[in-house]
Image (cartoon, rainbow, N blue to C red; front, side, top):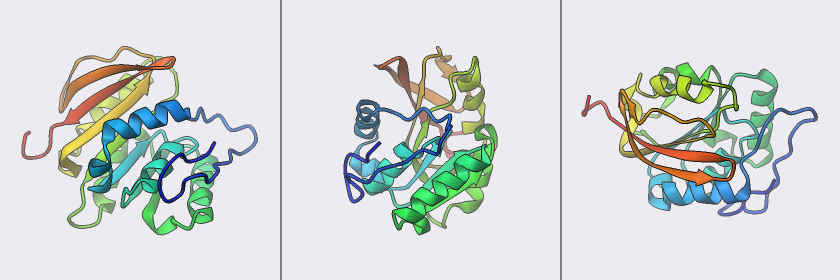
Length: 191
């Protein structure tokens, strides 16, 4: 897997043997990055929940995101994410958080630099029944982390509810064997 655009273009991500990561294809990454837009990517932190290989978050950093939070629960996967950041010389711009994605927004809130908000969030949870749905409530637990124009995109084959506390569904777009669900979080001032 290679990063397709930006300062890290062409750099290769290697997965550890026996990795269970299910990396997003180039087509899906390009679709996601186009939905986020360059201005939004560059305006705040990028939050990658269920980061897996880290390819989407590294693509965001490559395209100008100033800070990346990669969230994973598996220790070995976290070690691989840190190694990729170190190999690419961007470790100062990457925070790897070993925490459950359902509870990560509070941890992110504590680690955001003063004045910075999360402008983009991507979730690519394992294809386990109800896993995607279980991640939605946690996104509303820290409404003050989101920038005013933040977008949250979740890739899942599941059908998600159109009404979620703290989230507004903007669109659903087919992407290969799954769909991209695009949400706008309600920020602290909207709650």
